[in-house]
Image (cartoon, rainbow, N blue to C red; front, side, top):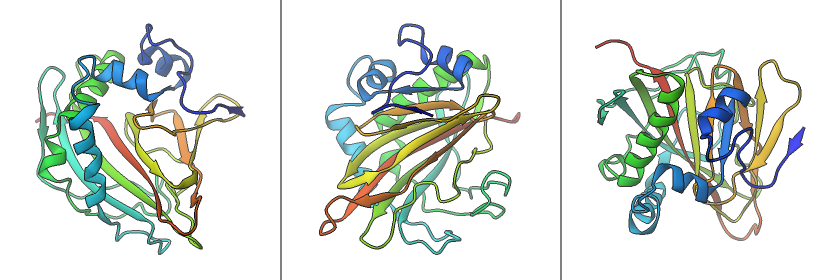
Length: 254
């Protein structure tokens, strides 16, 4: 197992672009400063007031009522977008999220309707920068593709006596083409190590997303990923881990 501290590009330099790492190794992990430079070169959307307002949106998430393990540790909101290869992001009507049991043996196999992403968060310059940046990366791997994108805001709570489980289904794939996972923030938590396993390659890579905007981009068709549980560092204070997940699947015509 390869163990790294924090996020670091695997298999390619920033100059080569994360798509080189994804093509070669199945994924690219970017530390926050590299992600900001890639997705927001003007420095206006993923830092300062725009980023702060976007990150505050995680304080307004609602409980996930579809936890088959009975856990009370996950809050979330969800939205769907259409991203054309050369056009703007269009938010689609609110709809359920579905994963087959082969991808999510714990919570899959049913239509799960979550609280919608707020209008403010859905129209955020920070989100627009991340959507456009991810589309540019994934578009270089699949030129001309229009994308069905699902946005997931997650807050995993860390409580004494109840582990917070970012991926209670274990090591998994999401059933899409590509995925972006970006850390929004961590507060009073230990754990939360990301594990990566690539089809056809022995062993597992692991690292911890520890700073805001530490980001992983991965090819979901051949990469399995999971995150270890979190627990409060100081049991007398609440803790949480906030993450944004954007999944990209080639859109059907129409």
